[in-house]
Image (cartoon, rainbow, N blue to C red; front, side, top):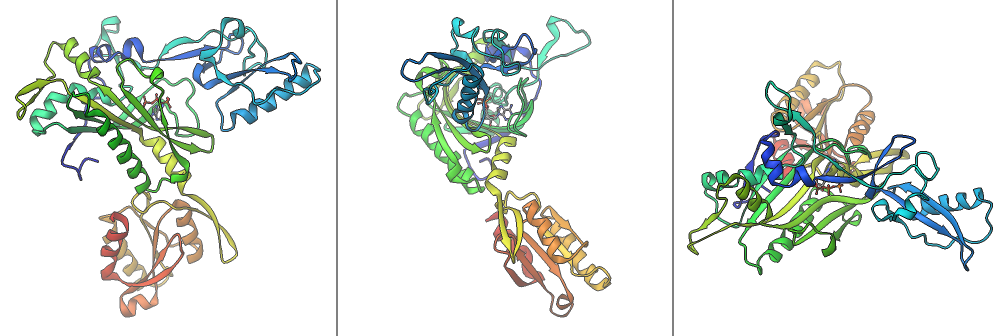
Length: 448
Ligand code: ATP
């Protein structure tokens, strides 16, 4: 996205910036999640991840009651089980009206709220209405710790791009359309961090702000172009397309300044959820920073002899979430000569270890030395793994589990003709190859 394009500049901005940045961007006032508390268990839930349904019987058989449950892979299935349980507990007869009308807690009316059970206790009456909770982590800067020293750990990398827009544009001498890309840590006080690395309080974000002219007719082309670019990049690094999808945000759910937003979603084992967002954000952020700082954020268009505040398209993805989707895409079980194998079929460019290097035996110094030489040479370029313990088959299997695409075995023949066995992870095919040809081979396979 950065090095192979001419219209992109990489940036590394600070994690802690002036709190005024977060006031201007609207995060201090508005970066909130609606939360629901259970007054009995003291547990707190994100209102859009806590679901409820009214359980009714068919043929006007009456209302059984309400059930509640947390976000999961099969909401309807789990909710139906809870509804049946509720019916049995209440000693009711009849058939439950299906499918259940499942809603999240942001939709609960005051009347419903007292009837919905807490997922922690199973009893109704303890849930509060959704209340806003700011997700930003606060810290203090300087020696004194009072209101004036409050600062925030960035909840996204994007604002660092906006505040540096003029610096980057003038020093890198780029012309619109162009993008600024940033990868770095972001922090959010998530109430329900879970699902392994899917949602955490400290995560790595990759964001691009792609600056475009303000004319109404241009943004849609750039917007759909970025959705396509994001999609094909994800598939090029081994994301399983059959598990991917797109969800277009309905116009009514968009932030007031946003023109459109599409999520690329992924079917994780715990459900289909957002992997990456692509949003057309208008010129909201630059407008806000310009107003708050009193410094012009305008771009001078030399060709058109005019000044304007550019609009942006924002592709944004969490690296951790991306890795989880890659692991889910790569996980496979198969059988090799009658033995069950677990293998991570990572694309070679994504595999954390690129090559495993094994001397066939450890008690032959010439073989050890030759293998060490190959290891030391490859190590300069790739992350490689040295393994001398156990039978060769076991060593292959360990590398399969780690998703290592290639293994090299140095044996007695190597000493005669300078060839090694290169074993490929997915097909388990073994090829004899000259040591001198290894670097070119791996370069082709890994870097494409
Ligand atoms: P969600 O609805 O899942 O909380 P979001 O809509 O708040 O996500 P954005 O603010 O659009 O997410 O952030 C952009 C990207 O950053 C998301 O698509 C996701 O990949 C990643 N991301 C956001 N929050 C987290 C988190 N707590 N842990 C890991 N990745 C995250």
